[in-house]
Length: 292
Image (cartoon, rainbow, N blue to C red; front, side, top):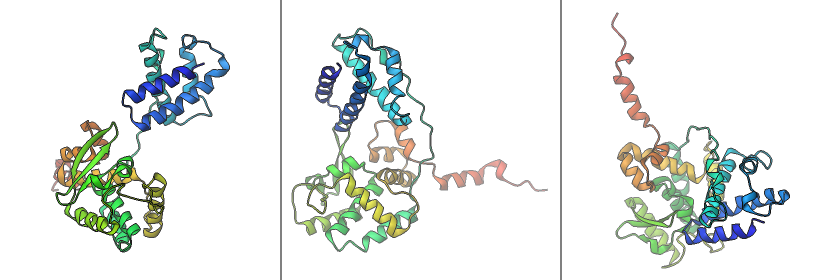
């Protein structure tokens, strides 16, 4: 019943420049909703009630809080589209509450951990794959790139002479970052070794654009070989880049490097500087022992 409306909605999302990842998420959640609503045998979207939506959000084997949040967002977008086309008179999904996500303490790599990773990969950088892995880790840990941006990099997006790299971000944004000198040197060596002038910057062993699975394999191998206890993943390196950059450059520069439109988003990544905190606590009047 809802299939035709869903297809039109997804086509609308493409025209409205939704990101590919967003469209994938919308497709999955709408298919779930369609499967959920079919047994009700409703002949029109007007027959769908608020209770149907509430039941769907919490249905399907007690989904995680993140799945619930994704379902609420999808329903809000979909029913807004139905209102725009006058297929329903009111967006009943607008009042769906987002589930509360418990805040966790973000993790990041210490300077010692990151240096240990770089040292290990530097020892393997004589081969094209070894140098590729070193470049991947440095771009993630120094510039805090998202995996989607890293995988989308092309050789044409790098200017070693000027030390610039152009990043394609979600929302189809494109921005420019400066590369540290050490990255420029390694990038030049990597490009010379590959002898390619166009195409994907990072290739898999099968000469295809590097994939999410390839990155996971790199993380797993590095963790096993270095003995680092933290589970390595791309977001951990993004937190690492933000934390250590914030120590030396401040929140404004960190926001620019991470590509956040809102300062509040950067604050989630740029953790409290323990060095500054220690200095503050030593100066705090109540930390001074009174003379007896």
